Length: 310
Image 1 (cartoon, rainbow, N blue to C red):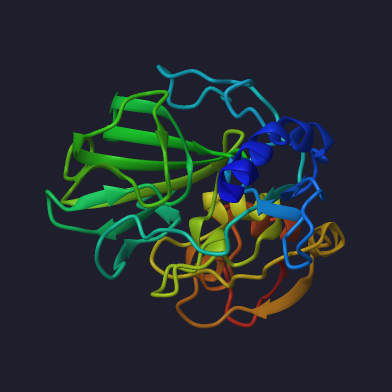
Image 2: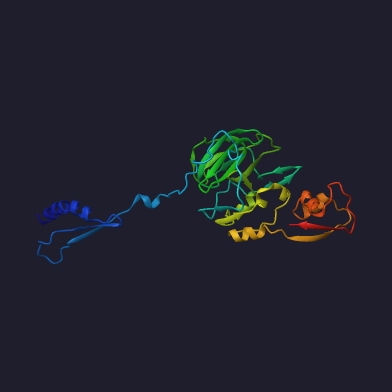
């Protein structure tokens, strides 16, 4: 009988307990009547609560609010960016876009007289390709040159492009998680063999992918807060056959100080050409000619001194 009375009393006072509960509290405290004479009787019960919001990641930016076009590869084509660019990542790691060791067959940089604005990762046609980070699919269709292509815009504004696919498994406006399947690798578009052409862009500006990501087995970001100067958005400053010297800027001050050009004197040696000198020193023929007041077809003399701005 006492058990029944206690149960009924418990139910009667539940409403009172909920009304008294603090909305920010993780528990509910329920006070029971104290008319029972036995001292060992519990007169207060505390029930823990779990909020569903604990597992929800709130996004502070609506990535579809600006320049969201699912039919155009680069909707930022007519915009002008202000450098240096600041890019922040929530994660310290990314998902490898391919299910095996990342073998880079061609890097970001000047290649065969044209800018190569991404990196090529070796794969076999049919290999799965996944999203590197959480985001929303902005573009998923055939693109001239790139073939079957998927572009994912991530929650920090960065876009990653997965090109030359043999099959697309997502559609525009799909929300995707890090590591989620996007399609199968292939050889569509302007491609000389099966590979994944990976590009990274921020508000239309191509960025050297290896400036942002460590493309080794760690799958780690180079930093969660980085500043990108114009050098890392221009393929003409880099050679697609080798990795550039990666100087990471984690503050705006570091990025701005790097813009102050450093000069060095180069002495022309036997067999040197402007092309060879520019490649060896990570500069451009145009910059060498402009600094030294010479023409592209000027004859170089052994022992001649050139000023190089790096």
